[in-house]
Image (tube, rainbow, N blue to C red):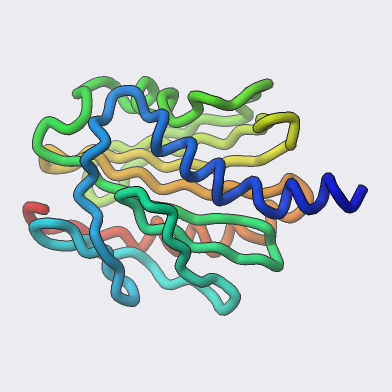
Length: 180
């Protein structure tokens, strides 16, 4: 049992890395380079995100994304941006589907289109396994001004609902007004 918990504890950051690395329609040249509280810094500008509560800290995974970890919740929140034809101009559900490459036993529970920053966005909730470890994932995908923005939460099923409010505050704080 200890071995399973230890595996689940470390699965979320690696799943975040796998989700980004496997994103089939995106070149591996993301625009995200740094983070200041509430602001994701890109190669040519920035976009704003909402605050995270205490317990979240930034982790670096060697990819063009901003990643936060909460050990108590065993969860990871991430965001990335791809612009200037660095992604396929496909429908949001197709772009979302690319995020799940490498997962097994995928069960999409809900997909909800909504408006975010005056653009259509797609929120997806699912259960899956990664190398036999059960995970829950919540994603938000948005295209705006020739850019694709991804937000996602990855965590163990038993603690996932406790991490959701922070994820919601994070992506709902999104504001983007210029070129990145």
